[in-house]
Image (cartoon, rainbow, N blue to C red):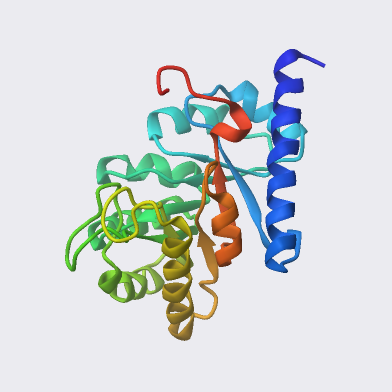
Length: 239
């Protein structure tokens, strides 16, 4: 076993233990929570090792990193999630490899994704990114639509050719009333999810929680957690 494989094996086991423990504490079954490994800045060779170790969901937040990596790993059975802020000029590329786009936060992006998915004969899963630090009509500091814009955007996704409304996503905000209150933030996201499912019953995916706060997300009811550092290590140059 290579040093890198041994390292990833140990890290993945620790994260798995954390998720299992959080599920047990919340009275949830382990299979209710899907781990998405965020592989940004790490090479395709790591993705291959992760697949070998049983990971099936990977995420990227920059198209310039994701596109070549997805091509290099096209022979693997993986679900690719795009989780970063997405500019419309990158949509055509992202729509060619991503299975789920978790950062849908404006109607212009819905229109562009729909056109690209339709052109490529693909169906793209979409999550509405909710910004819990945004006022009405604004976008959040880290992307995302204000809570009062969820319904309109969800309806736009649901009616767009080539797109499938899967649910909601958030990033714990650094400012506003939920700053430093991850559990409260994730609880609020679950409230929005419950409301959304009233009109869109199949949109039951809730993506929340990262390396530092995955336990809070699991406790709140998240169906997917996005973990990078705890699996892959601290990224070079990013502290």
